[in-house]
Amino acid sequence: MTGATETRDADETSIAALFTPFRIASAALANRVVMAPMTRSHSPGGAPGPNVSAYYRRRAEGGVGLIITEGTWIGHPGATNDANVPDFHGEAPLAGWRGVVEAVHEAGGVIMPQLWHVGLIRKQPSLAFPEGEPAGPHQLGPSGVTGGHGWPLAVDREPMTQADIDAVIEAFAKGAEDARALGFDGVELHGAHGYIIDQFLWGETNRRTDRYGGGHAERATFAAEIVAEIRRRTAPDFPILFRYSQWKSHDYDARLADTPRELEALLAPLVDAGVDLFDCSQRRFWEPTFPDSDLNLAGWTKKLTGKPTMTVGSVSLDVDFMTSLFVAGTRLNIASLDQLMRMLERGDFDLVAVGRALLSDPRWAEKVRAGRLQDLETFTPHALKTLF
Image 1 (tube, rainbow, N blue to C red):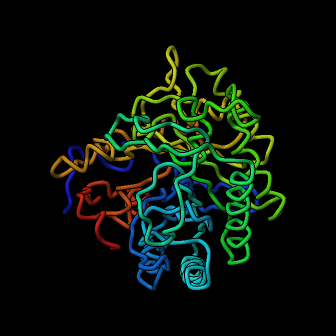
Image 2: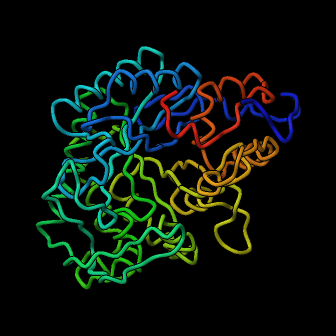
């Protein structure tokens, strides 16, 4: 279905900056449009098939500069909570991913997998790893942490030991090593939304008293060690992206940092470890992160670290993801592209990740570049169920 609350000609909305080249270490991007990672659950047994290859290829053909895959399970028993989400380990899944890489590259695209471990957010039992247990930095007890959409983070497990931590670091590093061997153009680490890396970053879930806990810099130690090991196992110019967020799936009001100084302390160890670009997840890209400034999370991250950043959050749509699941006919918000372009042009961030809009419309980038904003497809929850 095509529709919009507002349409305008190409000369009324300056989009030129969105379609200029950009480089992340060894990865050369044709433009600044990125396909955001979105869970699809269309890989039975953890192996992506030809339908997954075709799905990503369509976005490359539609003009996306960089594709970041849906989250993929690293090879650790506690990583997974859905047997239909693709694995990033094992013979069949890796063979499937090789087919995805080849399809995207044939279409002239650039692609990186997102490596994922859910930590304490884990359904039991897991079909993929029935022996795996939820793992996290701190014992939360049965009451745990809730909020937001109401997904609980409440698991009465012992805190991860050093051996447990080492095993997860190894699994992330092995995933990145395999990604490079398969021909992927880089990797992204899922350090957002309340999953295992984020559980170490957030003070509510990390109350450790060893070197992995304490202040903001100390809570980043686990993430930094993953990045450093990936850098050691790959190459100096192999792109490492790091996604993080203030909000969590179980607590929309959560904050990793209340001030720029706290955020700088949290991110500095990741910069030192070798992160090339920060993927700064927000529910709405236009919302400021701290008072007395209109910079969003990507803007503050770039200012504090000097590293390139990516913004995301309801790009070209009028409501955030969770709201859109319960609102019939999420509308296009073309006017928001004006603000997005102003922020990009003044250098707040370098890349723009598009999520739901690219599910409904694989040619979103092509249409925006051509000024065919009136032809953009509206998002409906049905798009979540297909691999169109």
